[in-house]
Amino acid sequence: MPEVVVDFITSLDGYASAEGWPGWWGVEGPEYLSWLGESPENDHLVLMGANTYRLMHSFTKEGEPGTEVLTGMDKVVFSRTLTEPLEWDNSTLVPGDAIEAVGRMRQDGDRSMRTIGSLALCRSLLEAGLVDRFRVVMFPVITGATGRERIYDGYPDVALDMVDSRTFDGRIQLVEYLPRVLDGPPVPPPSPH
Image (cartoon, rainbow, N blue to C red):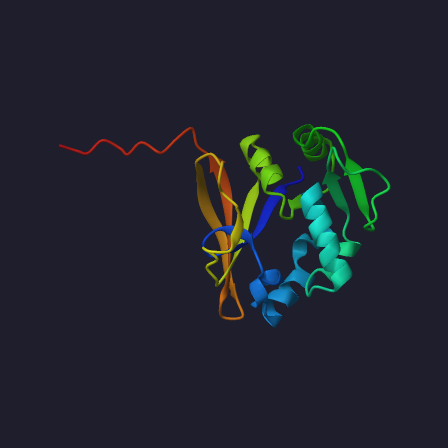
C-alpha cells in the first residue's frame, strides 16, 4: 500500500515561515540542497493546499534555490478557490474533500505521497490516521518575534517513534518518525509499593 509522508521544514521554535526572512531562513547549505535534489521521495506524488501551491510556485518562478525540482514533480492541489487549468506544470486540482481523496489514492493507488507545507491539510491527514511517516527538517534559527504559522497549533497529542535522523551542513537537523495519534497524555504505570 502506498505511504503518506508529512514533510515539514521549520525554525527551531516550530514556525513554518517568518516575516522578512528569506527561503530556508537563509541558512540552506550545499549538503541540504543536494539531499533535496536526490531525495528518494522525489517520485512521490506531492500533496498541497492552495496557499502552499501559490507560495511554492512563486518561489520556483523567482529561482529560489532548491525549489526548481518541484516543477518536474507531480502535484495534487486541494482547493475550493483555485480553478483549472493550473499554471504550474504537472499540477492537478482536486476541488473535493482532501481526506476522502487521499484515502482513495492510498487504498486504490500504487504511488506513495508526501506533503509540502499545507499545515491544515497535514493536520487533517494525521487526525484521519492517513500519515505513515512524519519528517521534520529543523533550521538553526529562532523566529520568536517574526515567526508566522506555528506548525503544531491545533494538533492532537501524538507519540512519535524515531526511525531516522541526519544533520546537514553541520547545522540543519532532519528527524523522521512513525506517528501515533493519542487520545490524550499517556497514563504513567502505577508505582510499585
